[in-house]
Image 1 (tube, rainbow, N blue to C red):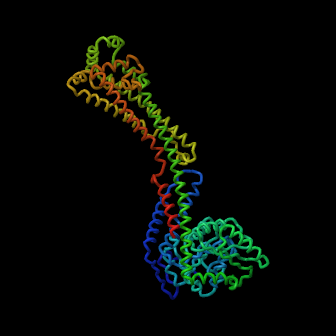
Image 2: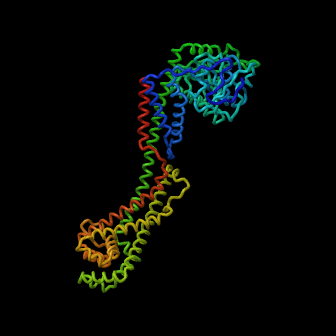
Image 3: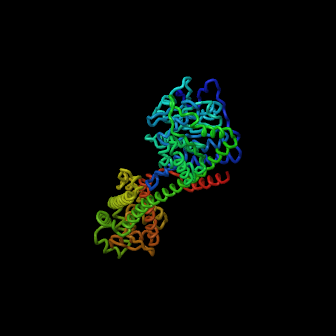
Length: 605
């Protein structure tokens, strides 16, 4: 056999024939509903993201990929065309004689066999010429390109037959039309399931997942190998029809070996599998088995192909079992997604808790008098005057107003210096607490494998670039809002003259001092620290607006500062939260619903 590289659906017809097109029968309403469900399952499985390094996540990722591939390769195509020919995949262990068996079934070398491993690199699909239309398009195995193979006019030995081994063409499917293949069934010679090539093993698994029935080839000395049995058990879970070929069996050991293999099959739930014995024998000059050695299997395949009702029953049985197995796989992926969501929620909670605690510490620092030390206290004392000012304060509020008003009208700059000192001190507190929150979050995440994976090698334990400028801008915006609050409060005719006489900056500075000296008590304005320093600001404001108004102004200013600090640190915590990829929040629930719907679909079938 020779081959021509003509991938895609536009293949040349077999010599002397025009390929027939086989449109699927109009689907029933139930079939349309099933296809709609399966397409939704495929779409949602394709979108599954399992980014966190949790136990078992690699298997869950592989399960999701395999489920999508099987939907594309087998389940959806079979639902759309239940009357298509059966696809019998010939698979098995390395050196089991799969290609030799396929050649014997058609009566001449069509696929390469020999001692070099792996022999089968490109899978070869043999079909009856009248069935060409079912396979030349991408109805099944759509990810594999098509290459049309032709049968050589002169018989080639099996060591030279078939496609030339080509590691670069592992993603292609060689199609060969041969009248020796009974119409209604196709044979696919697959790579070794335990090949030394990773690509070959993956492709073998993909082909077996697309099979309507599996011809499993093993040998007298390898029939108990673990790898093929794992795939056999997978076939049992799909309720797929399996024909087991026990190859190269010495005549003297036939009874013992076949009895042991039958017992193993029955033990693993495959007691209904057909067992065909191929005795150890010599190959002819072309590398062919004697025709009579495979006659029982050839007759079984022909009878199967001739029975349209039987073929339909096999197709439906395998499809139904595959859908049921898919339901379990989708359910397992749903559980994995749920575990990811729980782990992500824990990591998000760690970040939010750290930054929420940082906001609390910032606010505590603004109401316990801590900011009324150092530079802020010095600038405020420069602003209000000397100790003599404090001694006369209680005697005459009016005199306080006059002195303050004269002070403001003559030299307003000290009030501005108070604002700047407050901005600098508050910014330092915010930067320090934001850095603490980042370090705490980084430590929590790195103590968790999932968090370590999300962080990678990037260091997020400090504040973000530009955060200091953002904090300063937010403080200035708060100060401006506080000034506007005073203007709004002083709109009445009685208070307007007073606050104008003191100046907006002076009253603003006084209100900031009051805000930073009030405790968390709910029963009114209390002075926490700095003694007379805070009393001056409070009495000044009360002289202009009254005690109730001052309490209200201070509370409003504090709530505004709280909200701004929250927004500032919430934005800063996003550098952690943005490590999570986007995903639908209800993915686990949707997939669990799909699993239940697939189970119902299998039950109804």
